[in-house]
Image (cartoon, rainbow, N blue to C red; front, side, top):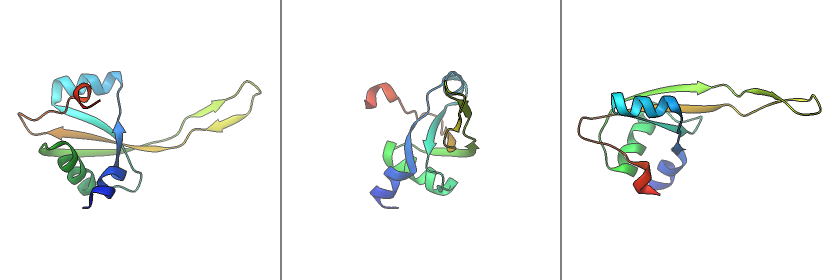
Length: 99
C-alpha cells in the first residue's frame, strides 16, 4: 500500500472515555477510519504509520446522530467508521508523544 493511501485510511485517533479504558485494559487503540477501508487496509496502514504489530482489527460503522437546531430544524450528522486495533504484547502507540 502506498503512503498516500495509508494517510487516507487512518483519519485520526478517536479519544473518548471508553477508548481510554480499553487502551489501558486490553492494549487497544481506537481510530476514525475511511468509510471504504477494509480490515486488511487498516491493519497495514497502522503497522506502516506507527511501526507496531497489529494482532486484531474490529470495525464498526457509527450512525450519524440526528440533532435539532434552535429553529427546530432536524439535521443528521455524518456517519463514520471506527476501528478498534488490538496491538501485540509489548507494542503501544502514545498519542501525546506524536503531537
